[in-house]
Length: 393
Ligand code: GDP
Image (cartoon, rainbow, N blue to C red; front, side, top):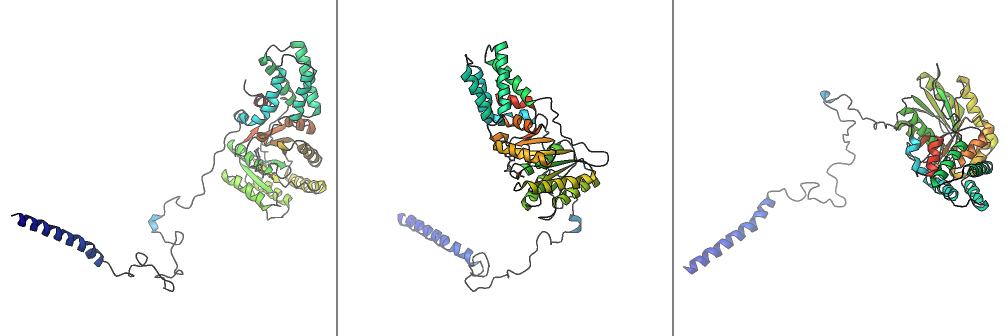
């Protein structure tokens, strides 16, 4: 009996092993021999011909015929969706924290000094130095110190809150809230408003034109851009990209073509399209003042054949300090600047430049750039600006 059990177990094991051994071979035997399934288990060797020549024309999405009833409305390749720019109102309040670097030197520095128990001669000197360091300019710094001295003598400063209120009031007065900072971008009866944007290359001119187009689009205005910086193809490309993002057309010419004729064409296109505003980006090479004068003067004259230019915005880089002031003087001689755009205020401790440049040119700062983001351009508001400098108490 025992022998019988052992014999049965041995027989079962042998049969099982045989089945397991044969099964994969049976499966493999059902497949075509090696080399007959190209690309699956055949590795081509050097000199072998490909099963299908690389030259064989292939069908792609553009050439493949579609069944007639498969054409669905709107199924053609769509451009990326248009961006919806942020409305500009109140932007400076939202972007106020970007003034943090100015804040630490100018605002906090001044507040610290004014809150000292004893305001002696040395402290007043420190206050004046702080203002100068922030690029406020010599005359405005002196003036502010004198006004503060008088008010401290008459009213006294009871606590830090009083020092802050006093400083806020005087700084706002210095920035001058009475200036008209609105942009003349209202369409005329028969033609668009024209805004000429000038400034030295690198100050952020093209970026500003792009950002300004977004501000206007957010207000539902029809805008046309003119890439009148024809010396660098990259500048025209950059501007076109800004426009494309918000559905605004850009008029451009071949590289090296006459900037005045591009500007002229853009204004004509704007008139034909019944646009509200034409924004003209210009070249800003400052090698020779004569060259700049000739070029900008010509752009303005040629554009004015179709009607007056409504705004000439001078773009200045706030981080360049005195250099910016020199540029401001040169441009003032070339064109009648009607407003200043101060860019890169987010990257400087020299917020005082706002006052200095307004005084120098006698025209208001209308817009400020507070970052590289598409909506980081804010209408300038003296109170929000000073609050940004002083920080929230
Ligand atoms: P353009 O040569 O005067 O037209 O100058 P661009 O528009 O090409 O700008 C030069 C550089 O400045 C770019 O890298 C911009 O992103 C940057 N820029 C422009 N405005 C601002 C700003 O307000 N803040 C900062 N941080 N960068 C800015």
